[in-house]
Length: 167
Image (cartoon, helix red, strand yellow):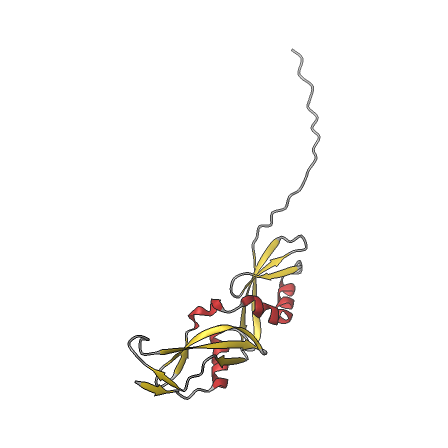
């Protein structure tokens, strides 16, 4: 049986996606917006439709939306498919100062896994990890210590042995 596309408020969905993903999503574009959907046993009575997520006009990846006869909902369990390198690149001007304030030795920051950053000092040594979330219109960044920094130091020691005792 075919159902018409349920009503959908894109502005409300953008606000909802900001909260669900903790990212500064500014737009959502459905990649093949069909006007009718078929609910069958094969698709577990829910049709899927991919949607591209954007931050300030730049695509950061896509999420699957499920279409039900009465509503449209997003599967947010696959957020790690979003392009964290691109997200950090777009938001670096906001995130980096927070990290630098928390760790003055910060020289370079590199994206790791989703919402995680590696913080390096001037020698390129990993000194901290940063975890990022966009909450209530601003970045919340938690910088955690590794507590152990390995350094190689060369030491020159001269030992003077005492003379052998007389027998």
